Length: 368
Image (tube, rainbow, N blue to C red; front, top):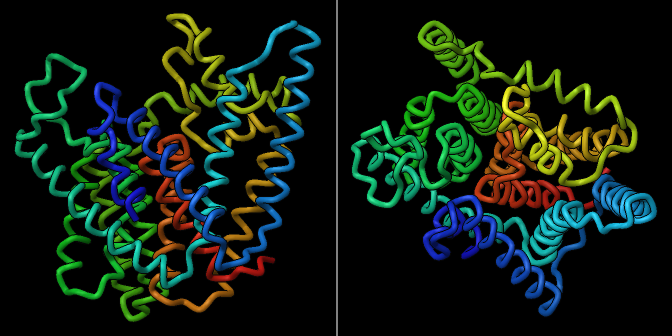
């Protein structure tokens, strides 16, 4: 509860670190604490997950083979690759700790704390709209007003974060939750992020489909109308350089498509791009599946898609209680946003996704 509820605000404890590194440090410390607690106390659940098991095995084979190859060829240790592998292992440890120590009832209890954190995030966003944020200032010195970025430092990331955590607000029992849901949508619209809006609508669609079947037609009409107005009022088809960047990344991907270049490769190779290069300043691919294919190869990307399909089957087979549907909605929002952004690389978004995925697995613990 403490790790997840405090995650969006953790960087206040680790200043002068920037929000992303401060939140990542909190997530790393919290993950080690959760795992140590789960090992020390003992687990209450046994969750079979073959796709994740094969994905871990492939990570080990890939890292060890590239590690050995680099030592033999270049006579140096590729330490940046170990950093990427460590981040992945921390995610796996967090998932393991959650599935060992939680039940669906425990997920419900934790969701209450996440709900209060979501409310606090939204209030902080309102402060920024009112130009009352005393903690953050834009990197652009020409801007005299606060930018709506929440505590994650970027409007598109803030919209994605709201999309991932709003399902927990949705399933609470008090009537005031609807004020929060509407407020969350309003803030997402103010962020002007297409990826965030689509993620929010997908999450809401999952919730409506399973929990409010009478609303399906009305929700579909409202969604189409909202998207239509958005397309007319905004430059919705502007991918902000993604098409050009993806084409350049594809040429890199072709060089080692099957095996991949190893975890952390995109970040390291981005340091070599010069001014004028189409990938200059691109530290992420802005498509997590594509980046996984570049770093883990087609084998790793295929295993990840197997894991995604397994999650869908688990949800389909599980009893559609509010907590299970909220888990599914949160995971769906994360996946949709990951196709145009990099939420897996941001602790304050990805951490909530790991929690939701653990809930999906707890709902159908025998796997497929």
